[in-house]
Amino acid sequence: MFGFLKGMGITIRQLPTKKVTLMYPNERPQWPERFRGVHEYIPELCIVCYQCARICPTSCISLSGARDDNKKMRIETYDINFEICILCNLCTEVCPTNSIRMTSQFELAEYTRDGLYKNMDWLYHNHVEHGSFRAMQAEKERAAREELEMPVQQKSDDRGGDK
Image (cartoon, rainbow, N blue to C red; front, side, top):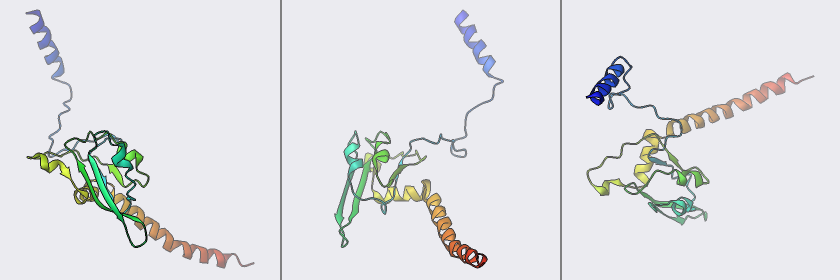
């Protein structure tokens, strides 16, 4: 009987405290900065070095590439089996060009196991929708604006420097 009353006391003490439940589909959780969600992949940056596939402890990454006319390696296929991926972040840390990254996306529910086998196109779409695509585009636009403004500033400096 004492255990029951003790449990009810704890329950009653918790009633006036603030609730932490989120109404999930409508309210999204705020994840920490280093949260490891589903991968994003940027094929333009990949140099097909196979380091991500070699370091993966579950061997869930498979990729292939071929040399183009300029003798540079270009990616042809990049697949991740999320059925066995443990989201350990090792593949992102070893990538020399930062072409594979982690996002805050975590929803991977599927009706079949085959749905957890994601290809390069799905990973790039994840990059556009949930990853750093917008930030990268904004950075490119900012750099282009700075490059356009640079000659104008140099010309004004040249005119002001007449002695």
